[in-house]
Image 1 (cartoon, rainbow, N blue to C red):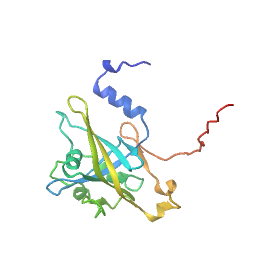
Image 2 (cartoon, one colour):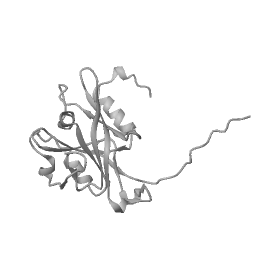
Image 3 (tube, rainbow, N blue to C red):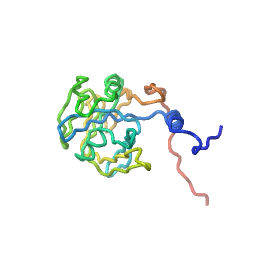
Image 4 (cartoon, one colour):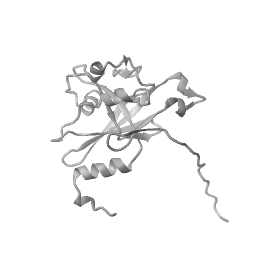
Length: 205
């Protein structure tokens, strides 16, 4: 199978990407509007961007007509957000928060989520999550002409990890039980894991 990307439509491109780039970690992003409305939404175009300074990236697709989503608008206006990580214990609430709520309605309030004050940013954390990254906006890169997506790069300034998940400087993945995004309506748990030590190149004499 060979595909000329210029010959297929947006929906076909979407299915190709989300079906091939799997599993994808999920950022459950909390942000706050100028009117103090707490917005909560999940995004699976999410990953590590840099180690030092510690940065993460989240791509937020725009609505039809190049209209920014509430999350992107809030982050650009306030310069702050929190990434709350997703696991088997909160995935149902995460899915509920993906509904297209109007800007004046707080998903956190509508769903009944627990909001906890952050340490370094004004945006609250979600109590139903056990790992939180408090972030300050570093850069937004608008992708597409007309604009189709906002690639948000945030600097992590404070981290919260549930004590039972953290041991000897590492996160216990089994206890963490993260959930990732697949294609369609599917999610995935961590399955079988295996190690492959990174090889060392030895120059031949």
